Image: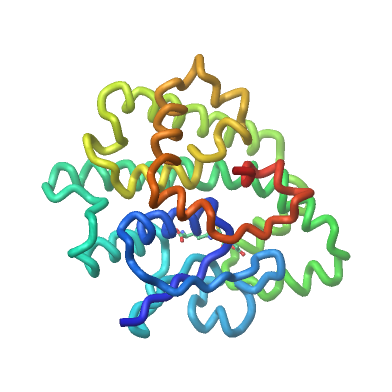
Length: 254
Ligand SMILES: N[C@@H](CCC(=O)N[C@@H](CS)C(=O)NCC(=O)O)C(=O)O
């Protein structure tokens, strides 16, 4: 059996798939893709994932992309490892509801603030001819536009909308955690790994005015319970080569 995960720093999408691998105790080869060097747009990487994004799972030569798909694949392909998905149909539906909500209404809005504060700084540091050359290699139209917007600056209206989306998500998770210990019920699931990677782990540092003990005490307690899990802790200690000068903008600090 051969299993490889191509990934970047343990945050956002890379962390989202590192957590289940570590939680399930599945042996895999970690292949670090350096986003600071735009390795995800190199021809060798585009052969693996034509969309030019991490993470990518390679299992016995088959390629699986998109974290929500990767993570459910791990559940199906490694049934003898600790489950991170409920066995009953209703539990599965609850978990998938949260994954859909996080993928559609959380991930991109936290990401916009990260790009605004960090990628914008990187993009403006690249001379314009070189910048256009790098952007021209990006396969996805949306990502090309995101890089250009990061360089010129996101609009106040877009940033304000992103903040509003994050507030809605935080309040929604806080309400859920008043009912169940984990997002989808009594069991730690892929939905918890998803929200933690995209919002929970960086909430207090990246959005201190939202992630307050007054507003979301249960969410902050849940984030501590997440970090106390050996699998999550192991995922968080994967290599982090973020430029230290930019680190504080992103919540990468552990
Ligand atoms: N929907 C994809 C999103 C993947 C994604 O946005 N990955 C980011 C890292 S968090 C990436 O590769 N960014 C670099 C780029 O787009 O050039 C997934 O769930 O895997």
